[in-house]
Length: 261
Image (cartoon, rainbow, N blue to C red; front, side):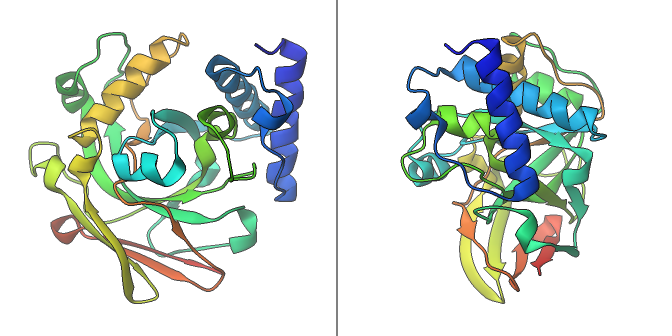
């Protein structure tokens, strides 16, 4: 495991990489003895650094909850990152392409909580009871570490590649639709590039939120009322370029759109 001096130094590197829009060598190549707990410690210091600079914690993201995502990354277990207020955009947003590194898009559902969730022992029923509404969202991936050969240790340290989220469509109560069967068609520049259904996320997207609450409990943390939780992607990451328009059609839940300039 790493000592606190090393954890602080890596967090500072990642803060600067975000400012410089730089790609760093994999952490596991430099620190082969790193473990997952080191990664979450780095992520926490990184988040605290940004909060000290004026950002506000508004939620969490869950990554690698579906087989399609695990196969796409070569990583076989879920992870999580934090969402700050300057990462959240509304549908129709124009995003600065150069603000992000290794830019990709994922299709997700976001859960907005009206009750806190504290593990261990949180179940899918606890999540559904604590959810004010669910809304379509796109996640913009922003990776500051080289992608080839990365491990979950690298990914978690880099805030699980969370760059931004775009929220839109129609918010729904959890009993209004069968969340497992919420579909999405993902378009890039009017061409369908991918599709999926939300049940690909651990069988039900609320299962991802339950996993998160229980995982946070291991780190002495919990989910608060008002938080927005990205439950995980049910399409593989789609690369985007400057000038691309992205559109996700969630059928009866509406659509989410953004453009990169």
